[in-house]
Length: 84
Image (cartoon, rainbow, N blue to C red; front, side):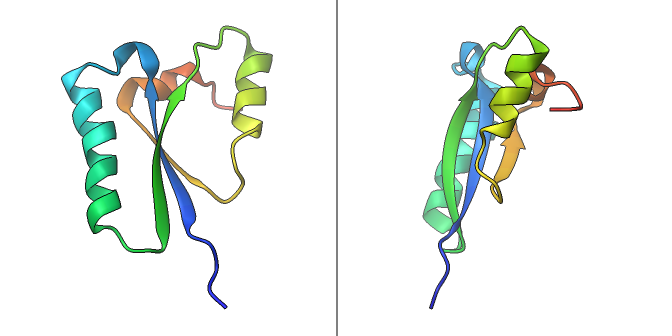
């Protein structure tokens, strides 16, 4: 029996989606991995919301799928604090 592929999320800030660096590091890399990656992983892009309250940030982080891999584009990680 084969297990389901592990989800991999490339996380970006929606407001910076048109920036060249976000296009390269998020959308293009995700597409490359979809085409050439192994069947072990399933690749997606995910915008991080503009969360202003720490409780909302924690809730967003806790609602992400368990066992998934998250790759944050440079400035997207700034949306979360270390506890999240």
